[in-house]
Length: 194
Image 1 (cartoon, rainbow, N blue to C red):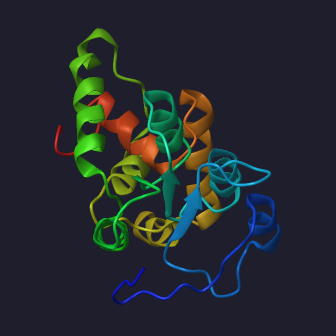
Image 2 (image 1 turned 180 degrees about the vertical axis):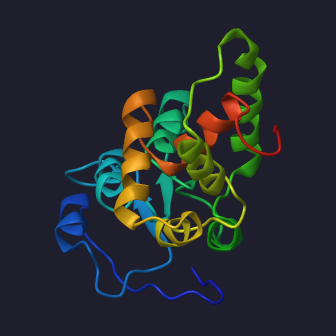
């Protein structure tokens, strides 16, 4: 399979072997995970990556799609998913989207946001401090700021930024940056809703 502008820098036989090598000295822009890897599944690897490297970008390949798997993949930070038998063009399109805009399968993500938003009037808006609101707004910004950049914008240390992230994760049972974006849209907390 030929792809333009991309090089494969590492390959691993299993999810366990991959995690043992993390962090990679020359970290790639994107990790491609198989949902059905030997040992640890792609979802289990996603969970581990989100705990240690929440900004990493992962594309999940799978043989079968179902609602529970897709929800779980997004919950743990997947940036998109593809069928294992996808064409080179489909893989190229997905990688281009993730590298350039942060996600692929954008239509599916937007549909989930619409579904969340349809029920948002039934729930009171969660109470956030001014700093938590500022952090959440930066997380949802199309510029896709890193935590280092957020710290600079907010005139805080990276540890303080991570503390805001952890507090929101714990309080609202969120597991990933994607989860924060969906949470924000569900409750209409950040632009374009305010």
